Image (cartoon, rainbow, N blue to C red; front, side):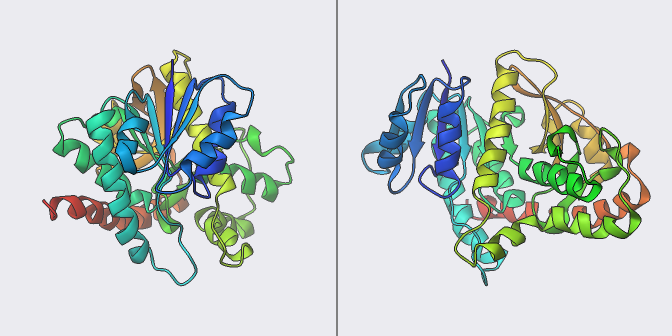
Length: 328
């Protein structure tokens, strides 16, 4: 029996993500938690004729404990989306506290669960989660993931568009670094099957992958951000984790992880010099089994992108760590 929890289930990402999990044969029971409306979302989804129970809980009456107890996988899209005119710092102050409080709950009630962080800024919220779990002596780097899958999905979609291919899903493109702007590094030279990106289109393609989120914010006229594509990406990543846990082999997805806690991670850390970094990760029964290191094969153009990304990441990571350490 697999119990999945969505924390932030009533939000723009949480609702479609919960729907996708309800449709998945890999999930038996679904617990939805949010500060408002989660029982309503649960009631709605419970009418769908797939197996498994759906419960919705609110903060009152130990709702977080109810949701998290016995969880195998916890997906966290909770928090507020970035609105026009809002700085990442404004976003950080609010979402950092939300993630901290939810992870306190995970540490107490489901310390062995896989934890998937979607709440932005991921570059900082994953280090926050790690620090909280360390504080409770339950940090397992093989089970804590920052979900960067949307960058990978966008890379495939936008690359297919540039080369005139109607089937984006056939392209596998490693995307490394972090999960915002210039910290996102698509390794287009390592695309399989191989593609030739015209030189005059390369900068624009990379920029679109890095800042694709802004495109959606603009198109929605300030009423929201990328919620449906993010829900799809979050589900795709959750599915990879659950398939690996069920014993399926050959599962690889990029994710933002604590490098030194996973086999192969130290080699990547020696190159980039950061504790957290998004790299292709191999999944098994206990989560991340190995980190793949594509960095030795990248071209000079990608090395420059990597250098910019690492500079940005260092500050983002410190900010997350300090949020917990300085509060202690």
